Length: 123
Image (cartoon, rainbow, N blue to C red; front, side, top):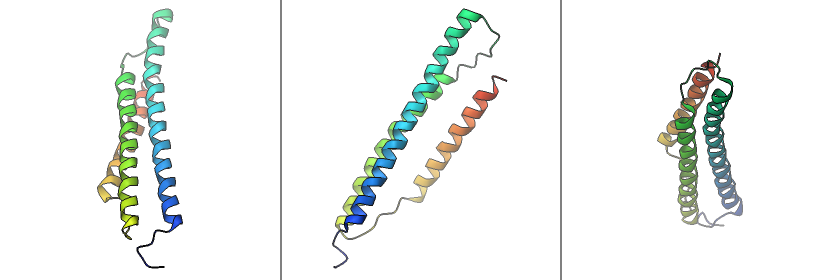
């Protein structure tokens, strides 16, 4: 077997990676939907019960941003699949660029921090 032949394990690993990107993208979209809907639930609850909740209303923009981040993850996963598939067909490999890992880590950390800050407002 020469180095330009595609191995089934490599192609299948690339497909599993694409599916992992898609699951992550759908999780981001679903999480964004839940967060945005929580803002609507909170508004309805305040109308009915008149509690003294702080009204930051960050949930809707944060939910929308999280859903959009999910869409971006899906697009990036599809692009990574195409780039890796093309490289495999040429007998090469294609690693993820380091900047992409930094962006993913930064976005994940930002989401975690925003959720923690928003939740701390309800103490």
